[in-house]
Image (tube, rainbow, N blue to C red):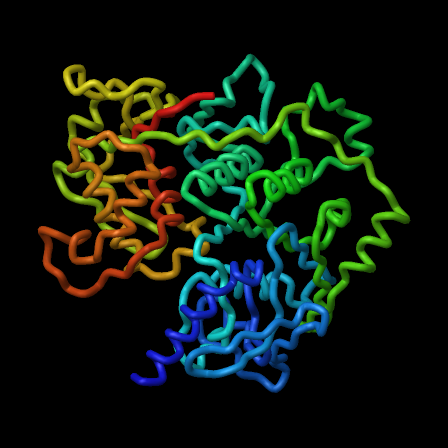
Length: 432
């Protein structure tokens, strides 16, 4: 027990001192990053396992309260690329960084992989639900004049899902965003010179991430870490470049800048500034929990049991349910609700939340949804998240058996889950 406590204290100390050294993440020397297999959190034990080593130019040190002085690689604030050939450890490094928002137990191998607490993973999610999100920094001028200041859809494309996820993460307070080229929509990441010639900027609704990523750091102080193996244009906007070869990192920043100078590319300049992130208010109908409260079935899914009347209110499956520009009026009831299907329950899919790591966290999110649905307050989402941050788990599970099977979710995952809840009624509380 003493070993666990000291390990936890050291990780908390590290995490609290990252910003002081202008770092997003620290990966300690000797860390074992790969896992035993794709569904295990155990470290890979093999003769071929390569302990982590830091490039000299990126090596930093900390003096921890229990372990003493440790050294490792510091990922700086700003824009960092993780490059390298296939199967050389790029995604493994990023996955370890993603989970560095949590403390690890002794002998996990990642005890010294520590990330700022509000880092968020962004990926494409075709088919996801979006409600009243301002995605204008990335998407504008859609066909038929579809509004992107208050964008809603029941069936998002890969690019619109990424645009919405970024805006939702910033609304929830994220100050670092992680991307893996393998799980992103290519047309959202970059538009190369040939495509710029073929499809003019005025005919392309998407402003790719590469055209915004510097502004996100320079103006909004949101760092980005990207795994890239094919999008070389990003060399032009990177502050640091890490090259992974046979699971060992090297500092390729100087070489990347030389290549960028020798092989210039044409980067489109956005026609508008990024602007501020609009805060939204949220309400969840009490009829969602009248029959039975939400229940986490797996880490990736929450079963929902809405009342029969909530099902009956709208039986059209292709409408934007729950989305509204106006505050709900208790005297008129709910006019826009989830498209009903003849089934006993539906499910909230949270499988795309890569940093949601335990069903115990999912159980807590289900109880938070219940808590919001029971409330008569119409608060902004950021206010709900701040309130939940100061609630202990006993308060979250008030009124139910305290069986000890809950774990605290981060505010990032709570916001991501609520944003994917098709019953949630979300509207912009402020407008530009």
